[in-house]
Image 1 (cartoon, rainbow over the protein chains, first blue to last red):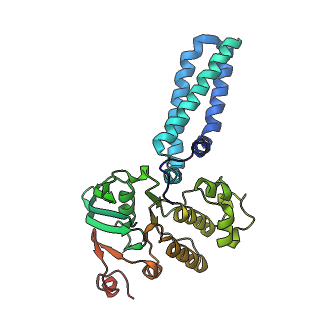
Image 2: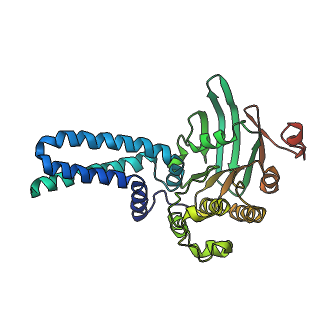
Image 3: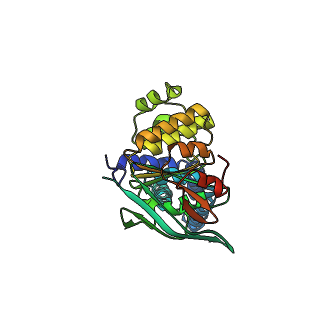
Length: 108
Length: 217
C-alpha cells in the first residue's frame, strides 16, 4: 500500500497539541500572569506585556529547541516539519494571549 | 514495481576536514542495503545528508526525481537516528497509532509488550524503546527507511527478531542500514557498502571488508 503524502488532519492536530504541551505550561502561566497584571494596571501596561510575552516565547523557543531537538525526528517521520510545529503552536499561543487580554479588557 | 533511491556526488567538509568526498550509494525496494565503516568515517552524516537534515553537496534521487529535502516527504523516506527520538511521555499505543499501526499486531510479534499499551515510552527499557521505534519505521508504508545503528540497545533475541522483521518487510520497502554490529548487517544486507576515507566502496566479496581494513572476519 503506498503511503499517503499527508497525515490525517486529526492526527496532525494531535501531534501539534503534543508538541505544544512541551512548552505550554510555562507559556500559559505567563499568559495568566499577564492577564492579572492587565486587570490591575489597565491598558497602560499593555505594551509592556505584549513585548514581555514575545520575549518569553523567544526564550521558550530557545530552551525547547535545546531540550527536545532529538524529538524533531519523530515529528518529521510523521510529516510535521520543525517550521510547522513552531509556526502553528506559537501562533496559537500568541492568539490565546491576545484573546485573554481582550476578554479581560471587555469584562473590566 | 521496484523503486530506487540513488545518492551520489556527496561531499561534506567540517572546516578543513573533508568527511565525505564523492560518496555514493544505491538502495532499492525489495532489498536491504548495508553501510559499514569505522567510527568517524561519516556513516551517520551520510544518512542525514540523504535524509536532508544535514546540509552538504549532494545529488539524491528517488525514482529519478531529485530530493533536496527528503525529510519533507515521509511517504518516501523515513529516518531512524541512533538515539531515542520518540517523546518519552507518549504511550506505546499512541506511538503506534501515530504511525498508523495496530497495537494488537505489535504485541503479537513482540509478546513482551502484551498488556502494556498504556505504558509510557519512558517506562520502557532501552531495548524495548528501540524496538518500538524500529517497528514504527519498518512497518509504516514509506518507500525507504534509513536506519542508523538499529541493533544498538537490543539484546541478541531482539536483534534476531528485528532482522526477521527487516527481511520480511523488504518486499515492500527499501532499507539502508548501518551498524557497528557488522556480522548482523552482513547477514541480512545485499548490497553492502564500505565507507573508507570519505568514499563508498561496493563490497563484491566479504574478503574486501578485511582487505580494506574494517574488520577481521
